Length: 198
Image (cartoon, rainbow, N blue to C red; front, top):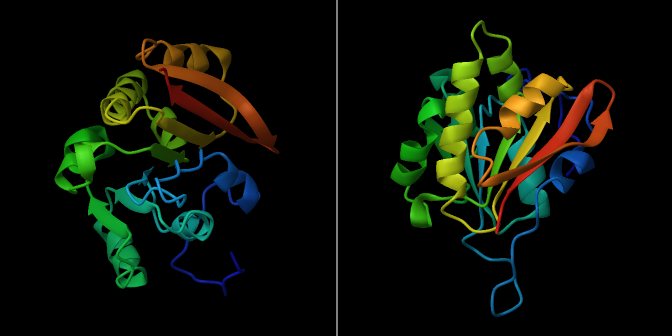
């Protein structure tokens, strides 16, 4: 990934986290029978905004399919113009709290993904009053999507979470999702991950 010229349309949450660390959180795609990355490997970036994260991921995993989901039509217009000639990137406008139906409608095989990538979305939900409901709904939707793909994961880039918030997150679908918080810390940003239990 090469440094891009400054683009006023790009807004990055947690921009001081090294690019390498952001991509290292994603488990690599399994190899197909011919020894290459699985062409069905897919990554859903929720609350993607206009981040350059998709390019970082594609530089590492060029055979992966990316689904970019955001509620802002303006952001999606920017991304669709940016990636109009990239057939491995799908842009979706919609509510992340309905991601399960949106992913099915996007025609990915099985309606599941191998990785959900959350870079700042959970932070935004936690800023709202009465955040418990939206966060529980987010994780319920994520569990529905991830349950369709064995070995899938939820990658979380966020501000450090209080123990009580971590406990709340762990309590959502504990039969399916196994969380590890603070895999890495970069300043005031914490990198965490949940994996689907086998």
